[in-house]
Amino acid sequence: MTTLLALIAALTAAQFSTLWDRNIPVITVQSSRGNVAAIVDTGGVTELKARRPDDFATYYHGLPVESAMGADFLLTHAVRAGSADARGTPKMVPLHVQTAKRLTSAFVDCTIAGNRYRMLFDTAALSWRSSDAAHSTPYGVIFLRGDVFDQLRKANPAWPFEERAETIADDRGGFAQAASMVAPVTKCGGIIARNRLIVRRAGIATFAYMKKIFGEDVQGDASLSAFGARAVEIDFPHRVLRIW
Image (cartoon, rainbow, N blue to C red):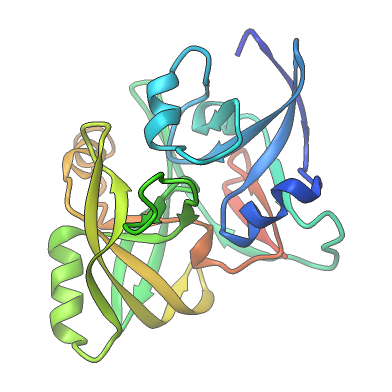
């Protein structure tokens, strides 16, 4: 954080508008080098591309960003992203924010096909189409842990399903193909969304770590795709996600 100032502004540049359309919150951050683009990663930590290029070559591949604003920063700062002209009273989604062993994470409850899941609120839960060999066009999705995905798939065989159409970053910092399906209705934090893409996350390292340090049986990751918002304010200090 020594190279980043606390001044945050919602991104309004037209060149990044398609990122929001793909459920990816990118903002502008004022740094010693002027304004730079940053992804808001509620499931990660604050870092610079210049210092951690491997992360930007995998988890954030295809994004025109120079930094990531992680949960450690969000713990003390509220950040708004999305359409600057969104007005009115926002919907409020409670976030279960926890800090342990110097790691901060936020959790939200989702219901899909009558099943309730504990999800990591992860605005960098990204996927790429497997046909996108250059990994140039990521988009936010809902992840489900492998065993949970398989159970949901078995119970809903009529849902649109593809075996290897998605590619996601794996737990080893590489890429892996993944199965996906489309849920007709999801409900996360009380917000109903329709026709959400759900991707199978086979790796269990992250989920096991959440269990170890937070005691949370995390069954997936919910990106902004789960909320379908025009704009959001991520407010960890008040443990809420405001949605317009």
